[in-house]
Image (cartoon, rainbow, N blue to C red):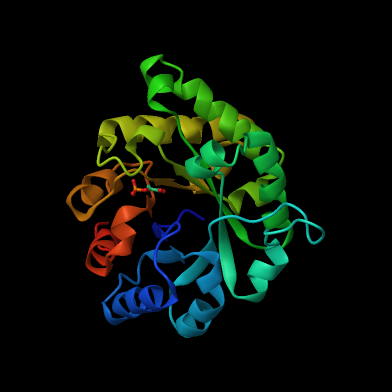
Length: 249
Ligand code: PEP
């Protein structure tokens, strides 16, 4: 079911006290209850945040997971562990994971499978680099990322995924895709999904835009017909901005 969603990806920012202070500020604000609000803090905060978020409408996401359930994978976290501390969503394949940790769409498909197997929902990221856009390769890049990362799923499983389109050139750069550019790609993603799974699945999957979303540009992005919300980086580290983005539908 297509939902309006605002997800804050805190990345590797804020220690526990700073994180709790920001979360309290968000909880004290009047968050938009018509929008699903998700927060993805550093993994070490998840357990405390789970306790702080009980009896609230805010959901918890992890920024990554391992594809195996347990074993000799030093430094990694399994989906079962994340689930045991209240995580409901897992960001998979953020461009920073693809770039700095050499994750590719095929290996990410195993993470997606594992998240789904445990009944959690992947937020699967795709997006082109500046060079790929300049060379007119953006549509092919994105369809490859979607097909390789998600098309092993059946219809019901895919409907449990959220897709995030994040042009790499717009992440943390202050440069946002124009609403027309973002809408064009979101529509392309929906059509790519429709070709494989049919219109019912394509029409019901939530597709978020990410890349320098802020209160000043959120409304015009979120009113595009194929944009269902945002995956927010920098602006999610400020309660006022994050809440204002959630109010931008
Ligand atoms: C992100 O990292 O997912 C992101 C969209 O970052 P920013 O909003 O800072 O561009």
